[in-house]
Amino acid sequence: MRKLWVCSYGCQMNVRDSEEVTGLLLEKGYALTESEEQADVILFNTCSVREHAEDKVWSNVGALKELKAARPELIIGVMGCMAKAQRGKIFKRMPHVDFISGPAQLYQVPELIETIWEERKPMMAIQEKQRQEFQTISYHSGKVTALVTIMEGCDKVCSYCIIPYTRGPEVSRPPEQVVEEVRRLAAQGYREVMLLGQNVNSYGRRMSGEPFVLRQAQHERQRVTFPELLKRVNGVPGIERVRFITSHPWDAVEELFVAMRDLEHVCEHLHLPVQSGSDTLLERMRRGYTAEEYLGKLELLRRTVAGAAVTTDIIIGFPGETEADFEATVRLMEKARFDSAFIFNYSPRPFAAASRWPDDVPREVKDRRLQTLLKLQEQISCEKDQPYVGQTVEVLVEEPGMGRSRTNRKTYFGDQGVKPGDLVEVLVTRLRGHSLVGEIRPSTGSGRTEPTDSARTVFR
Ligand code: 5AD
Ligand code: SF4
Image (cartoon, rainbow, N blue to C red; front, side, top):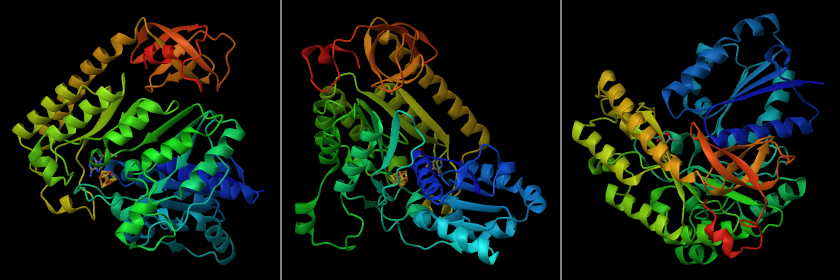
């Protein structure tokens, strides 16, 4: 039996892609192994979003040179975004790699490995196109939560971003297929689904298998929007929670917020990357909104969905970022009061428009700005944590003594005989870092299939 070792970098999308390839190989009789040394096939599913992500791959794949020299029959594959972005360099810098394949060639990987077993020569499977189809592959590595890809690629043109190049234009998975997969997952015992896409809230603009250009009228008539998809997934019996990531502010419309409010199982958490608080930079980043427009959307969200948690991504040190631009980001963070934020140093990326502009913010200025924002966000996050104390939250148990609130807060409680997949209510008594700690309360039935008035008063 051939042994497989898979390592995934980057986003949740990559995690799901790795699960899909793993699932295909398990069906062919492979077995997973915990150790690289014992593997017959080693796969790296890579990320290109920042240079740092690529550096880790250069170093970790590079380190396998000796293992490959000792066991030449071992197959090493580099898949995903970096394989596509760095395809000209990978074989040159790492001749011990057997194949590289892009995100769109996911389903060809098993065949590729077979060919290499037979022919023993390096292969490159990278086409320019986006993913052509979505298969339903039953392997999922999560126990309670299953990742479900609903779309792939991106039609936005953010000037710093390599993703539209690596993953191609946006293409959505047919809604019937998504719902069918969610049904199967519920039957397998999953309680939560996380819907994945680069831009989930623009779902439905172009379905996979559809001609590239559809007549506008026909298109609009047929379109299943993201809120509509949420409604369908929400209706699948057995699924207690629906999450989704990532949303773009451009497509964050009232219809989505209303769906988040009205659909019982859809969690009150929105990850809405803002990237900057400076209108000048937002324009150069080609984000399609101003800081005020973004804040307006947040206000509408919070007015519509009581207790909604909002998280974000921010880039600092973008080309030409002045002190005034940075100050504008500080002000935005003070106004937006995110529950948490991922803050990144700008990293020039090949194929992204901004890579032609000088990366002119000095290292020490970037570092100082990063520290300032981290400190500010830490303070805001602590303030956002406080009101949970004394409240009852609905928790989906993930492992003994630990689960997550609907707003995605890690919550710890004494192990009182509940098991992963159970929904419990926890009275929060204190905080530990940014996690909640409390005791299980007898259930009032809130947050379940039958909404009660008390569900509205539970702090989410
Ligand atoms: N440099 C730094 N951060 C980036 N991101 C995307 N591209 C870059 C880049 N070139 C960040 C954005 C995005 C998140 C997934 O990664 O904040 O929302
Ligand atoms: Fe990249 Fe922007 Fe698309 Fe997100 S929306 S994947 S940041 S281009």
